Length: 233
Image (cartoon, one colour):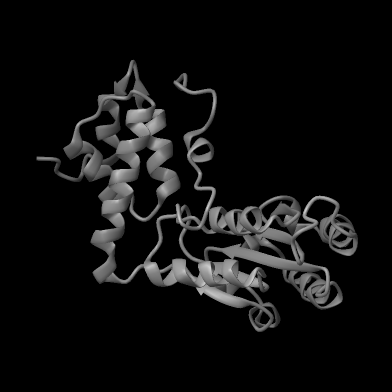
């Protein structure tokens, strides 16, 4: 199916600042405190897929002007050579881009897909390059991260308390409406609300499904098949 945009919506509309991220206020304040201090600690960001862990990591780096790289644990991150070479070389060199930032940052995305040996090497790198570099790990399952990494990171869980879910889902709904209006895509509000409620809090999946089924300037009715078990009446 041909997309209306040359860009994936998940990238085109990825929040660039912590303020713009849709998060519970307590979690957002934690990250805002890091920004206010001008320094990022080593972080372990844990939570379900699509909730914004990588987006937050990138926003922190961008707002602080940090020189950073992203290594995906699902592919290259699992190989010892990647950590030995790419991560080590980056961490040990002086930043030429983020001259105003205190540290460089390595983001290990989907870190729970890395091997035990890779995680042990990352633990060693955290200690070896602490004066020059910080590490941000994202994971869906924090129990797959070894304890020595846990103990060297500030752990932030992207959980949403039940009492906060209606409020956050409402922000999701409003953000999605804004995106569809910018893309000139027509939609049925009941169908849109049902999709948000069913896929919540997987923001990435919501946007991907909306883009996939946006045809001819409106949301294609085929999207109903993706959540046909939920009433939209």
